[in-house]
Length: 145
Image (cartoon, rainbow, N blue to C red; front, side, top):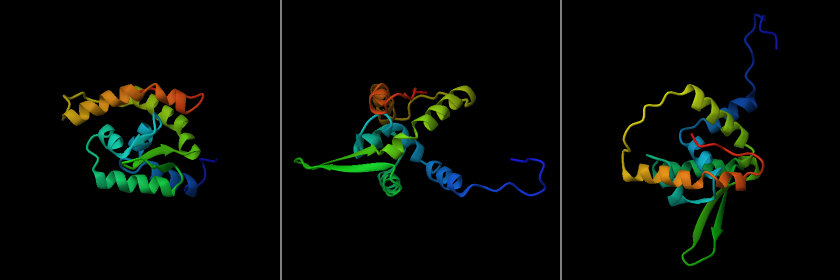
């Protein structure tokens, strides 16, 4: 890449699409949780503070259409629906590890008291799932921030 050129650098369309997809509000959080474990809708909603049912449903549908998330219907009584990452989704583990390391080093976050019991439950559930990413994603692990 020649940075001395007078012309503007071209944006890679694939990069742009990927960053727009992953950068959408809530999408990163959904993938982050699913890197740890297969989850039911209610567990995802509980793990992600302030997400609405509608937004979670929309994001899951988008990720499913992109081939990143897989929706599995378990034929039990009552029927159980679980969400998990496809191999394409699990391939993001390195990206999320890098982002976690960057955030740990560069993002200043003021810790405030938990907004609600839901927020506390989400934190507790995330800690419970932190080791499962090692089992689910092969060689790589994602540290909790």
